[in-house]
Length: 118
Image (cartoon, rainbow, N blue to C red; front, side, top):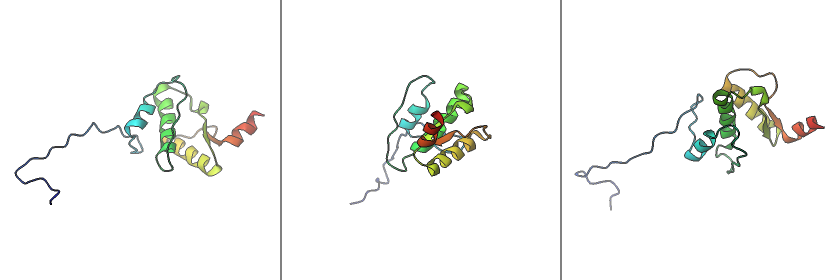
C-alpha cells in the first residue's frame, strides 16, 4: 500500500499564516504568540511547559516586546530564575535581544532578589 498520492491527483495543503519571527529568528508557537500579544497591565500569566519547550525564550521575548512596543524602561524589567546559570542565560538573552547594555542586571535568582528586599 503506497502512502504517496496518485499521480493523476493534485494534493493541496493549506497552512495557517507563519508566525512572526523576532530579530533573533525565533518563531513563537500560536500559544506563545498569544502571550506576546498581551498588553501591559493584562495581569499575571502562567507559562507552563516541560524542559526545552521555550519558556525561557518566551520570557526573554515577552520582556523585549514590553520594552520595544509598550515603552517599558528596561531598568524596570526583572526576570527571575531558579539558579545563577539560568539567571545568566536570561540576562544574556535579554540584553542580546535588545542589543544594548543595561545599567542593572535584568535577571536575578529568586534568592538574590529576596536578599535585596531585606
